[in-house]
Every structure is written in structure tokens, then in C-alpha cells.
Image (cartoon, rainbow, N blue to C red):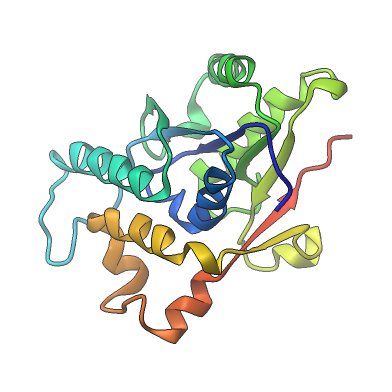
Length: 217
């Protein structure tokens, strides 16, 4: 992977980082600082564990601890939680949200931002988060803009966007990535059921991570 000065990750929910944990662990292994802005605590998530050990009241605190454990597995030490309400990011005051993001960008001066591709990321919070990043970076002078790598997985997205611009082989970081998924205990069964990292199917599923480069007009 191309070396970066500083990587900023902007995602809406705890566990969103797990799918790209290998890339983040690789940057950290290179000595690149990684800052993670997580917009919500995923408190409206449907999964309460399997068997259930959470409820609607306790879930936010549980998911915060899971997020912190996931970051430890990946190696992220700079975690910022914005405290927005789950499933309502699209209804936030755009100017206020963009200003908060711009303040972080101005502080850490990332060379790369990782977020969701607006319109191609299935969940409204995913799309709204990516859109906020694109708006914020788009207002910056072109010479000052960090690169933006987007995650997309909507059905048929490659037919519109073309193939991913970046495909990272993260085989050397599967333990960190698996640890990130496992940290999200309330959600883990939803992803993998009773599978383990020893399963070849799981290893193949986790081995690569894809991104699209957002091209500003």
C-alpha cells in the first residue's frame, strides 16, 4: 500500500471499521497515525447478541466498549466519538456536521480519508456520512484536499463505478481483523455465526479489502 502521512477514518457505526481493519492495521504497522471518527454508537442496531445479553437501554454502553476493544485489536489509539443518534445522520444539521469534520481534518491534516461512497453503501447512515466527508473535502482548495477512498457494496455498484481502484491484500493482518470483528460481541453472530478464523471460507472472505477513489470535479 502507498504510504500515507496520516489516515482519517470517518464511519457512522461501531463495527463499520471491522471490514477494513486489515488496511488500517497495515497502515499502523507502517508507522502511519490513524484517527477514527465514529459518528454514532449504533444504539438502534437490531442484534443484541446471540444469545441476547443486551437490551435497548444497555446497548449503547456495550457497543462503545466493543468499539474501544475493536480499536485496540487494530491498533487505533485516536478514537473520536461524535455522539450522533444512530439511523438519523441524514437528518443532522449539515453545516454543523461538516464543521466538526473540517475541524478534525484541520487538526490531523490527513493525506487520506476512508469513508463510505455516498449512494452506494446500502444504509442511509453510511451514505450520509460519506456525503458529509465529500462535501467537506470538496470545499477545500484542490491543492489541500486529502485523497478520499470510499467503501461501496450496494448491489450493482461496480456497473456504475467500475472496478475498485484499490484492492488491498491484508492476509498478514487477519488476526487483527478477526479480533476487530470478535470485539463486537453483540453483532458478531450476525457476521459469522459459529465460524472461526480457521475456516478457509472465512480467510478468503477477509483476505482483500476494496476501495473506490472519489474523484472531485
